[in-house]
Image (cartoon, rainbow, N blue to C red; front, side):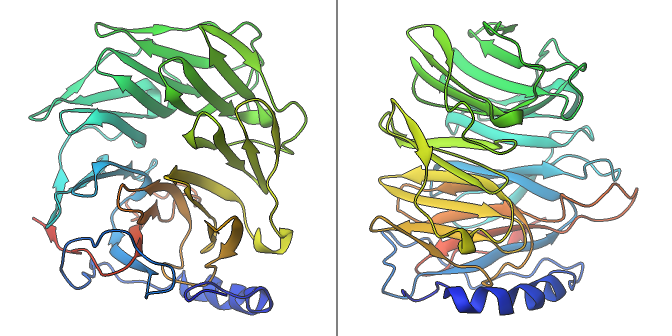
Length: 359
């Protein structure tokens, strides 16, 4: 077992300890040692999960970057009364940005540092042009849980109303450079859709409730992976058109671009629900509840369960250097106005990055 990975017999023993430690925290963001990210983290050379920012006043639900020196993490209070939370890392310092409004952001993606989309509650769509945020009408009041951009004039957002089949669901929106327009699906399922990802503008995936997987090629949508997932699929991503991953609940699915199957993983590693997955250059990371962290190493899955941070993680991102990032916090708790959700950002790799959050 490689350094930093938890052995299977240790997982059960660690679970109780993690549950206890995850409830303990203070209200001060704790920095780690400064320094820029190091390239190509080696699993055998001290790579590990390390908290970067902790105890923020909102949960973080998504992390993404245009590079390892332009990293975004977004989230919010989820009904607890604070403003939406957006932090950005420039390779040296984290800064909290101020898009305004209290509607929590659920996802962030873009094509570069001057073209970034943030989507969230009540159909919120916010765009960063490199200098300022702009709110853009989406045409829906349903929560938008996912966004993916292929180009400045070609982006997609998805959402819905979970566990309410009669609510606003099957929401797929397309940005054409001028406005967001609804994209009708050939067979509405009354399901909330959670994430969208594409290997290219012409090869798009959407996942959601009831194990729904939609695949769009050559402008046409089709259903895939029928009956494979036992519940909702929350995130989809890939390393390319022939290596696509979808996770949710206790399900980890993989597609070669043509057919889906269950990933070959010891079920004892899946100790909690899987929330996020990211892939880059053949390196795959999965994050989930209660300190669950999984990595695909040389074709085999390894568990980092029990490593810091000990809280739930929701979103993941594999940066161009091969390092992994995770974003999370207390997003699963019910709303308590005025209570902090203690958001967290963590990174897996060699070396450390700055944990300084500038005023």
